[in-house]
Image 1 (cartoon, rainbow, N blue to C red):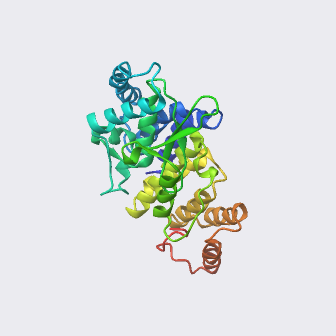
Image 2 (tube, rainbow, N blue to C red):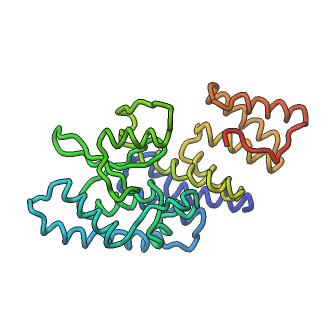
Image 3 (cartoon, helix red, strand yellow):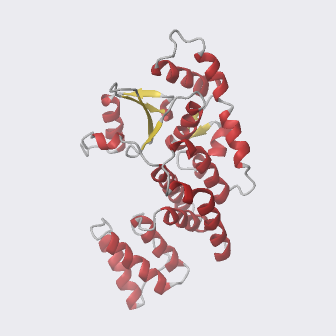
Length: 299
C-alpha cells in the first residue's frame, strides 16, 4: 500500500471510529466499529449499515423466545440461555480452534458469514444481539481470552459469559482455570482487575493487536503497517505500536524516523522486557550494521 493510500485509510479510520471512541466510551457501538475495521483493512466495499442490520436481525428470535419465559421480566440467566440457544444451537456459531490465528477470525463480517470466530469477535457479536433484547452486556479484557459480563441491578453482582465456549457462565473456579490454561505454571492470582469493564477504545486496540500478530506471521507488512497506524490513531503513546512503527520504518529504509520512534518507545516504556533488544538495534543502526530482515523486537 502506498503512503498516500495509508494516509487515506487512517483519515477514514479517524472519521469512522477514532473521533467516537476517544470522546465517548459507548460499548453499544463496538460491532459498528469492528465492521469499519474490516472495511478499512480488508473489505473496502463492505456496507457497514447493511452488515450491522443483518446482525440486529438475529435478536428477533431471541425476543420471541423470551416472551415464553417462566418469569416476567425474564431472569438474567434465562436471557443468557435464550441467547446461547439461538446463537450456538440455531445459528451454529462456533469457536475457530483449528485455525485460531487466521486474520479472518478478526473480521466481524466474515465471522457472521462463516459462523466461526475467536473470543473477541464472538463477544462483540453476542453483545450486539443481546443489545437487541435490551440486555446490556459489557466487554471484559480478560488476559489472553476475551469475555463479556452482565451487571445485575442493585448490588446483586454480575454474570460473566464466555462466548468462545458457547456462552458458558464463568464462576471464579472457571476463571482461574482459564487463567492457568493461558499462563501455565505461572500461578497468576485471579484479581478483580481482570474482570473490570474494558473501554471501547481498549477493545478495538486489542482487535488490532490480534490482527497485527496475524499479519506479522503472514509477513503481510502492508496491512501490518496500516493496523499499527490505526492503533496509534487511538492511542498515540501506545508503547508496542510506537516500537512497531520504528521497525516498519526501518524496513522501509527511513532510518532517522525509525530511530526517533525507537527512542520514543524507550522513553514511554523504559522498563520494557525488550528494552535491551531495542537498544541493541539502535546501536546497530548508528554503527551501520543493522539487518532490516531481522525479527521485530517483542515478536
